[in-house]
Amino acid sequence: MQINADLSQPAVVRSEELPWVDSPLPGVQRRMLERDGAEVARATSIVRYAPGSAFAAHTHGGGEEFLVLDGVFSDESGDFGPGMYVRNPPGSRHSPRSGPGCTIFVKLRQMDADDQEHVRIDTTHPSWQPGAVAGAGVMPLYERASERVRLVRLAPGTRLEPQEQSGGEEILVLEGAFEDERGRHPRGTWLRYPPGHTHGVFSEGGCTLYVKTGHLTAGAGS
Image (cartoon, rainbow, N blue to C red; front, side):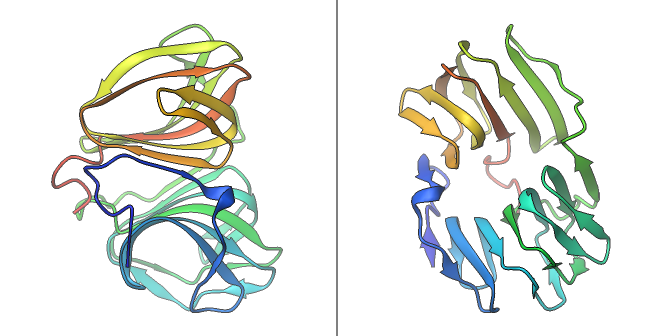
C-alpha cells in the first residue's frame, strides 16, 4: 500500500475528513496520512483505540514516535495521557492498550538504526522558549543530526517569514489554524514539505503545531 509515499513531493491532508480504517485488531482504527508498505510499513497515522482495546506484544524494528491527542495510552512502561510525547527506539518491544480509549498521532519505522534513546515528555507542563519572532513560542522535544522535533505556538496575528527547510518539514496542526501559500490549515491538518521547500506561516487566530524538520533528507530514518 502506498499513500503519500513519495517523500520528494509535498502532501497536505485534512485528517479529520479521512475515514477511519479498521486495523487487524478489533477496536483499533487508523486514519492513514502516509504509508509505504503493507501491515508492517513506514507509516504516519492518526490511530484511535476504543475503550478496552489492545495490541498484542510486538517489536518496532524501525522505532515508534507518538503524541497522545486525547484519552490514555498504556503499555508496560506506564500510562500516557493527553500531551505525552513518546519515542520508542528501533528494537523496542511493548504491548499497547487503552482502558478509557485514546487517539494518538504516530510515526512508525522512521528512526535511524543508531537512535536508541527512549523519550517521555509531558507537554502539558509548560516549558516554552521564545521563538524567532514576537508572538512565537517553541517547546523542544527531540533533536539529533538527522531530525529536530518541537511544538510551536503562535499567538494571534503572528507571522513567520518564508524560510527554506533544507531537510524537509512536517507539521500537524494540534490547535487553531495557520495559513501559508497553500491555503488555510485548520486543526487536524497534516503537511509534509520536501527538502528545499520554502513557505511562510501566518496565524490570524493563533495555533499550536507539532513540527519535525531535517528528517526527509536521503538516508534519514533508514
